[in-house]
Image (cartoon, rainbow, N blue to C red; front, side, top):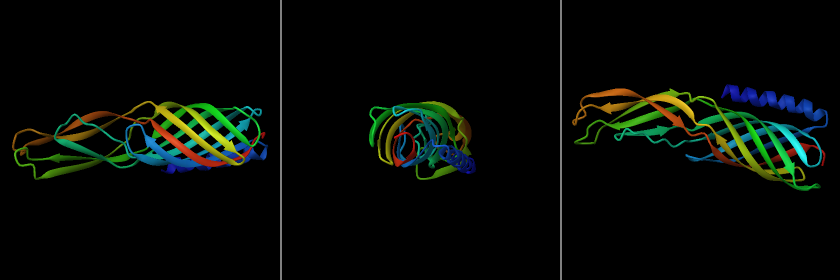
Length: 215
């Protein structure tokens, strides 16, 4: 989490300097729905430059958190995941469809996504004939960084901004271990490595404030 906090602090100072020169700044936060997972939350800061009343460019930093879903080929093993954090830095372009105080827009962005470490726990029944006992094994994994892009639509009403975007992000590969039962009684077991691609894509709906720009 420290690297994501430093990212936001750096972007905040950068955006303050840019805004002092008459540019633009968006803060927004809201809900996340993972493509394969559960609901979560997200927070973003977007310093930008309003080229004219119809086009704007932004440098966007975001942190989102949600719990993923994961399927495993090990029939006797269930996998439980903690909520994971994904930080990202991307460039965004907005095209405004009208001028004035109420301005709908569409946009496109692309950037680099950094999944944070999270815990994974495998739960295995240790007896096949009498599945009353189980073993749990926890470990911390670090998925690989990934590239992604997102289409965006939204609405600016005065100082308020509403944003809907879908982040299409490459999968991240990570390795963990799972328990393998060697006999029908479950008395002989071993841990085997599993290489898995974790899904990073998500849908985001956020509400925030927009300051500055040529309105």
